[in-house]
Length: 429
Image 1 (cartoon, rainbow, N blue to C red):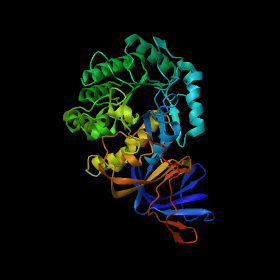
Image 2: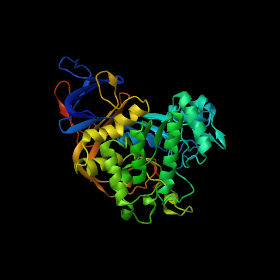
Image 3: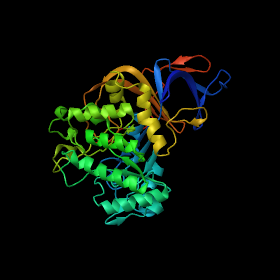
Image 4: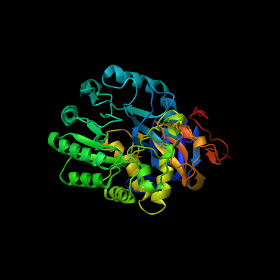
């Protein structure tokens, strides 16, 4: 059945426009008055805004190997609810993807259970040598060693040379283990090394979860020199600082929250284009792992269901950036950098988008999450944007069960027609 989203405000990196969007098959079309009304479902979007499907190039879905934390199914449910239509999964799974066979295990789980587009990373290294990057190049979005930065400069150099030959990006977790994570040198010393190696090898480099003002400055200068580098930060680094944290699991992440001056440098970085995109680093753990009853508290928080509402409330409503800029940071820029479908809404393009209701005030409630992870520093925060619908590949993968009116082609109105399309919550309680 065709779906018409009527009179919504469509936001993209270029700005906004009022449009009627027709979803037919897996494509979206700019609608006109000549469209065939037969078998047409119409949703009035006068009070809604529409953005291209969000793209997150840094998530952890834990499957295969740690399904008690998150699965492909629950991770994609959470992503759909958060407005995401494409995510890229980091390689800290078991088996870790170091060749075509091990990557294939994850790809099969994705094929069976994904509700949205999920593209995995391959690892850069396999022990003390390179992984079989050539075998994985056609199916991996990029190469990254997650959980630990590549400590060996020579091994990173070899990885960059190989990635450059394959036309792939190296995605770097800059975590120099000579320094504790709380010391920003753990981030920026390795960032400086990787920027130097990228300039030397010609490799395209992407730096994960930038948190330090020094790293922002290093990336800014590297771009001026012509280094092929992009970088991301995460919502929690843009909204919170170390003084906001307590000694609880929901504030434990790597890198940790840093000083207010670092937070301000990150904001300036997204405003001037030094920081290209925002990724969640969605990293769910079990309740026991986050409250310390399973031993030490593990680093990592959930983020897919909270990212857009939090950033809309704290950055857009406060006038720090525009909604069009947020769409660029969370959709257009990551799609373009990593060569992914989506990131734009255009006539005949992929039907990947999300529909939002602005001004809808509610508190973030982790008991309502679709992710199996419940640990977020944004628990209880009031936010002012609610996802009404996510469409991925022309399919409605999330639809809010709420007072959303729809009108059929013959003019009749009815309510209560919307419902969650992603299934039940498989979380532990």
